[in-house]
Length: 355
Ligand SMILES: Cc1cc2nc3c(=O)[nH]c(=O)nc-3n(C[C@H](O)[C@H](O)[C@H](O)COP(=O)(O)OP(=O)(O)OC[C@H]3O[C@@H](n4cnc5c(N)ncnc54)[C@H](O)[C@@H]3O)c2cc1C
Image (cartoon, rainbow, N blue to C red; front, top):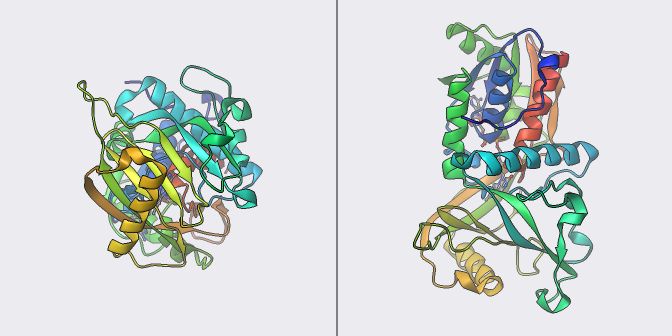
């Protein structure tokens, strides 16, 4: 079976290490996979599946929502774009598609720096700014200051997460269902499985800070509603264009057409930690989205989700000193954990290689 590319070349492969990865969300799974493919012995220690974590709520579009703007983030974005593009191109069962859609800007609040990290499209079209197509002014929503279309990876998370887990299993990653009270505890859990870990990767999402004495993390509540995806006679999705207007004055709007549903959002309540579904919020999300994308009108609601984006002033991807075992932190991905996952995992693999 073809697999997604990874950045660690055979020349860079270091002697195998025995590694515990805390967390089985999209970040932990991708890190575990990259490390196992680089030849390391990996045990994943997690107390919930990706589907039961915020990764299961993610819409799955490649977009740096609430991600830091830095050269490092730009590199991770570009690396991840390339990995998702390769999956869309050659591994259909992974659930990744490159889809065109429209991004709307509203003044200085809307930062389009992410465009520079765009890879080539599925048909090998240009990358970066040359890949976007400006929309004529008359097609801009009211109050917009710019609008353009481009192709982005859209990940069908209900397909992708099990696929990622299967890749981990095929690469030899062991999985232990357990809560790690500390990094040393995670290492000892791995040892009980016969893999005494000398290095721990903390990819525990919002709870990573508890393990590393870092109090800078904060939740950003997001609510979504998932609509039925109408299908043609061949079972192909009919609604395939995504739409993003994050800075709409009435609240953010995004529409992410996946293979089996359409994720409509949303909200980003900084500091809110309540994961209770709210009917009025959903009604407002739907009203905004239908006004922007009339083709959504009348589509049946098939499920709903509320999640807390694991945010931090900047993402943490680095070796951490002062622990009984070596530690690498991989958390704080906010609203872009899927988006940055492959780049982050490659970075973790190269940190292991250099340690
Ligand atoms: C509404 C919404 C929409 C989103 N849409 C997108 C999107 O379109 N694109 C995008 O890129 N991102 C999106 N995101 C953000 C994305 O969901 C997150 O950035 C990402 O899922 C974070 O993944 P993670 O693996 O770091 O954390 P999580 O998914 O939270 O996984 C954490 C893992 O760590 C484990 N764990 C934690 N502590 C311990 C412990 N002490 N011991 C053992 N196990 C532990 C948990 O059991 C779990 O397995 C969205 C988020 C929300 C809320």
